[in-house]
Length: 173
Image (cartoon, rainbow, N blue to C red; front, side, top):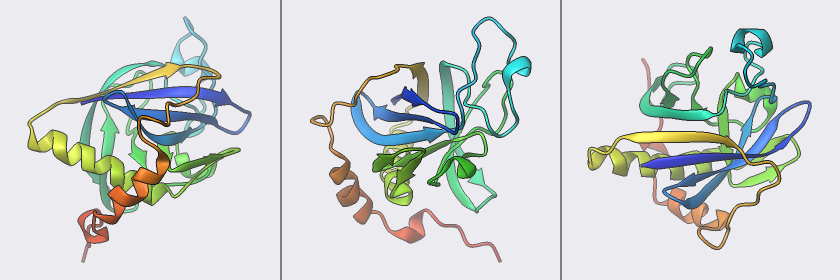
């Protein structure tokens, strides 16, 4: 499965964009502030927990996320970063250096993150069932717009409704 994260807008607080799965629009994205300086080591421009990851292509796995206790995708071997996940959240403060997904995008926020996340996880479940690897390409695509005709955000609502809440939440006793 191939994911592409298109970064489209950068502000002082966040980086907005959209995610495609196998060439089809999946969700909007929110990342921390874009600070990348090509050719300069990550350690020079990174602010811990508040910096979007470098552009590139990364392998993705699904592992248990101990905070707040559910399974989520984790990007592997991101230069200068560790534990970068795609997870639920709405605002820059929720990113903790990671990628948030939502069905709608506002200034420095995504909306309906849980719905978008559950719909995305259905793709991961299918890939796992097919023994298919997953990669994500993160690219700067400033000003680009998603092809909503390929898959409108409203379709995420229907997809998520088919997915039970219990299938994504782990109970720790």
